[in-house]
Amino acid sequence: NMRSFYKNNDKKQDPVWKKRFAQLQALGFEWEGRGSGNEYTWQERFKELCLYKEANGDCRVSAAYGNNRALAGWVSTMRGYYKQHDKKQDPVWKKRFAQLEAVGFELALKHGPASRHPSWQQRFEELREYKEANGHCRVPKCYEKNKKL
Image 1 (spheres, rainbow, N blue to C red):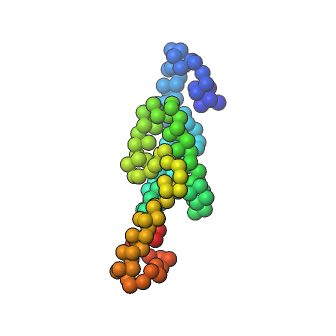
Image 2: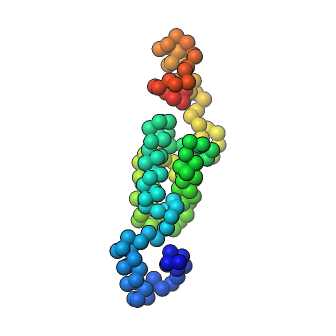
Image 3: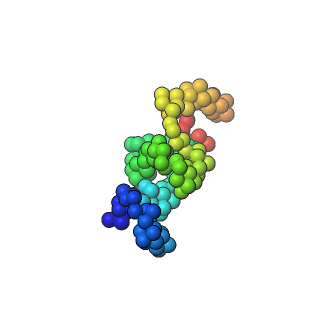
């Protein structure tokens, strides 16, 4: 197919093929095809990520996130793409990575339990504040001010 031919071919500099590739580009041909790199898919998943952050307070979508497995997979793929040197050099991907970082998405996760979860001390302080305001530590499951508490 034309996508793999383009990606795996040195004809990109050939004047005839250059013209053909330009015609396809002008037509709106998507070189990434379907999947995470496709512009439509990327925009949809990015919107879903923003909605996730709005609901959960962060962009740390678990790989086991059952509410939207496509988003969970996409998040993992984005981190994988970020590790690829050639993606970092591509202007489209530079823009996408910047958009992700702007909403608080961590492209390169730090390893270890403290990096995946807020510190114990942070949650303790939030609970202490809750107790000061409410007189007890029985935080309801649907506590709107801090869904993670």
